[in-house]
Amino acid sequence: MPKWNERLTEEDDALLAELGVDTAPAPARELTSQQEYVIASFEEIVRFVQEHGRAPVDAEGCDIFERIYARRLQRMRADEEMCSLLEPHDPLRLLDAPDGAADASLAAEELDDDALLAELGISADDELTRLAHVRSGARPQMPDDVASQRPCEDFERFRPLFEQVRQELETGVRTASRFGKDASIRKGDWFILNGQIIHVAEEGEEERRTKSERPDRRLRVIYDNGTESNLLMRSLQRALHKDRAGRRISEPKPGPLFSGEQEDGDVFSGTLYVLRSKSDHPQIREIRDTLHKIGITSGEVEKRIANAAEDPTFLMADVEVVATWQLYNIDRYRLEHLLHRFFDNARLDVEIQDRFGRALKPREWFLVPLDAIDEAVQHLLDGTITEYAYDPSEAKLRRKG
Image: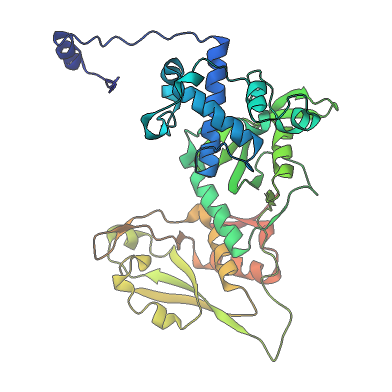
């Protein structure tokens, strides 16, 4: 039966009233402990389907939990009251019985794990099942290390950070190492857990101590899928240890950009170039002296800029070359990324339409004077770039600390 939209206007209310439809919201009902247990049991089945992409199967050779889930689902489908209770919790429509039928003789039976195990020919007193494979018949509590994720309302604030970390992993500016040798977790840390990049955005006050009297605290953990959770620090540590693919993401480091090794002479890596726009656009013309594009090409710069006037990367205008550096024995992609990251707080935020009318955002233009770019390159050459930061308010490099 379709549900009325809850966001009804006053006119809609009046019209529905004339039709004899009651638009008053239904009063919230309190659930019994048995109903709460049924919902929790069903949510376990939903999570199984989401993780495995299929419904649980009761067949020889299947995991004990899967067979229990299959039996539970069969009973739920056969009980109208359960179906009514669980309908709001059934986003995958699991309650729709195959072929439109269910065994009604099962409807009155309880969802008791011991009874289900007995049906499977497994004794609940068996030490193996009791200790390792069978959940208690009591309503399960959600452990901290699988704390429920909820939408992150301010994820747009974190999205650029996730994109940057992902790029830095791809270019080698950051590395991912097995979690364990360093098990510390602090605000600002990045990890890979269950295939997702996660970020520790906030760290709360000490909340409690574990049985071993170690301090523990709540964390605000942001996931790259736009969700967040409030895991305990020790719970996150356990989850990262448990995940064989769990990784700690390192802080960005320049690394060995310039190789001192030579084989049969230096190896040409490309050309670092700085361009200035010739655009007649009033806003571009006003900042022309400090607006520069920083890029690297493996070929000739002249060929790279030949069609600048038709390329939104070049602001749909011709450009002039104001500086170049020949690169040898260097990872040009990492060098380019490091320079872009170094001047990120001065990056031009502009949207350009290409000749097909599509809106694009060039990412390689910076409001930085040429002498500041030259100084940054020199610090890259001598390996001291991490000791400096760019101050856009004064358009200068400043030593940190």
